[in-house]
Length: 345
Image 1: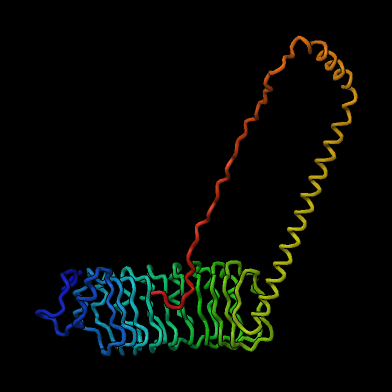
Image 2: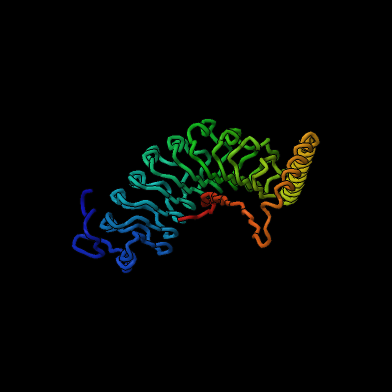
C-alpha cells in the first residue's frame, strides 16, 4: 500500500502528527497481532495507526468515544477483526468497507441508521454485530453477502425482514433479533434451513407458527413475548422462554419412555429368536432312531478287538480345540465446537 503502510511500526516519528498509545509496541511484541485500545477516551484514532499495517490483525476500539476514523484505515490490509462498538459513529466510515480481509466487525451501540452500498465489498465478512443502533429497516446491502454466518441485530427498530433473505443468505447460522418491534414471526425465517440459533426475545409476537419445519434449528429463544404457549419446534431444539422448561421436561420423559419401549421390544424379539433356534434343534434330533443299529454294530466291533488293543497304563489322549478371538474396533466421532457465545472475539 502507499504512504507509510508496510513499513516497520513506528510509534512516534518524523511526519507523525499524533502518537499512538505508549504501550502499542509492547502489545504487538508478542506476535499475535492484537492491539487492545478499548476504554481509552479518544475522539479520533491517530493516523499513525497506518504504520502497523503489516503487523496488525485484531484491533479493539470499544468504548473509546470515537466519532470518526482515519481515511487511510483501509491500508490495514491484514486486519481480520475490528471492534468499534460503544462509540459515537453516526455512519460507517468508507475506509472500513475497503478492508480486504476483514472477517469480524463489531458496530454495536453506535448511532447507525443504515449501511452504505460499499459495505458489500466486505465479502470475507463472517460475523457482523450491529445491535443497539437505530435500524428501522433490514440493511438490504446484506443480501449481497451470502457467506455471512452470524448476524446480531438486537435492540433496533425492525418490524420485518426481506422475503429474499433465505435465498440471498444461505450461510446464516446465528441470528439475533431480540428487542425489536416484530409483531409476528417473519415467514422468511421458516425458510432459513441452515439457521441453528434464533433469538426473538422481547418483541411483540402474540402467536408462533409451526417452527418444526426449521430442520437445522438447535436453539430458539422467545422470552418476554405476549404468547400463551411455547412454539412448536423439533424434538432436539432447546427452547428459552415462559413454559419452555415444563415442555422440555415432558418431552424428555416421553423420549425415555419411548427408549424403554424400544428396548423391551428388542428383548422380546431376541427371546423369540432364541426359542425358534431351540425348537429347530429338537426337530433335527427326531431322526436319530434310524441310526441306532449302526451304533450297536460299532459297539460290537469295539468289544471284539478290546483284548488285542487294551493295555493297562496307556495314557488317555485329549485333543484340545483351537480357539480364536476377534476384537472389535471402536469408532469415535469427531466432536465440533458450538459458536453460540454472544461475543467470541
